[in-house]
Length: 128
Image (cartoon, rainbow, N blue to C red; front, top):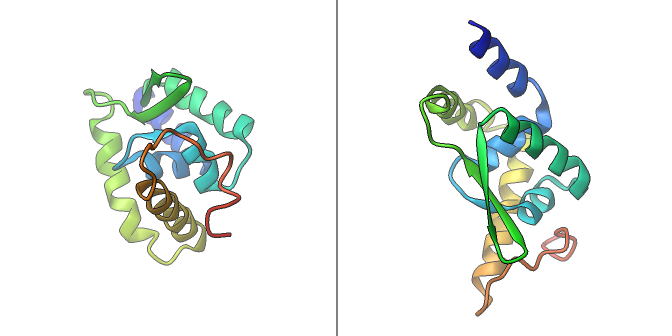
């Protein structure tokens, strides 16, 4: 029961939930996450640390960039099931739609680059 309560406590924070929804189908660099959420890097990094400590996400380093994805293990199986239900529930939520739209703009921008290292300073030049 404590594991379930801990999971719901983690999901009760809007920033952490928004991060998990972004990571549901994508591995993302920290700068893609904070640009999509339109938040400061320290604020996002603090929430990423909570998610990582709870073993819900993992990171990997590529050069100077750190990429995050949802951890795939027995503990996150139920988390992923819950998260998969939320996009339909949030289909009219302006914040969820803006996060998704911003991430799509970031992907469109990066797909147009020949060398696609993580170069986004914070998203301020991407469709705002």
